[in-house]
Length: 212
Ligand SMILES: O=C(O)CCC(=O)C(=O)O
Ligand SMILES: [Fe+2]
Image (cartoon, rainbow, N blue to C red; front, top):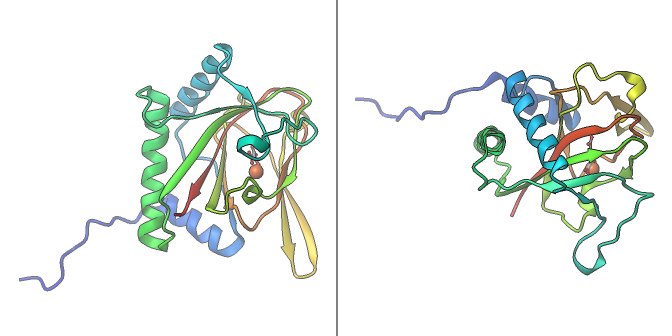
């Protein structure tokens, strides 16, 4: 007879890597969170929804204070609906839910909610330096950006994600190229960041894992 029940918990190296990065440096960059096939499905979903004119100009703040501030951010967004039974949403949320459950089991993060949107930054647009918890939402725990850009995104296409890192008394800037399939995860309440001007259409999914 066994005294202790074996839990069905199985260690997943990809998620362990992300967790170790987050603990060590508050951010993690992974290029194989989703498979190339999944990335293509997500990219095609974004493109067809954009062509159907479903995207709206992104705003700052919420409710009646919503303002369209094009000198702060120039992207167009479409909130994703988990209940949507399209392949893209299904595969995206299946993986994100698995990851959130894993975080809850291993790090006791208490992730209860999530919200994600597709984003398209037209040529010449950017998102000025900010903290994601500015968006009237201090429940945001982890920010996630997944890049759905064309293959072989070049440095001259711009659109880097700049993350500002406080090191002792000095500030360091980390610039991340938004190559297709890359995912960046970082602590929403800790790291200020910025989307540099894109010189080509820049496609992504952005979202937040949130506590109560
Ligand atoms: O797309 C990115 O790299 C980050 C986007 C972002 O900072 C935001 O939507 O709050
Ligand atoms: Fe942000």
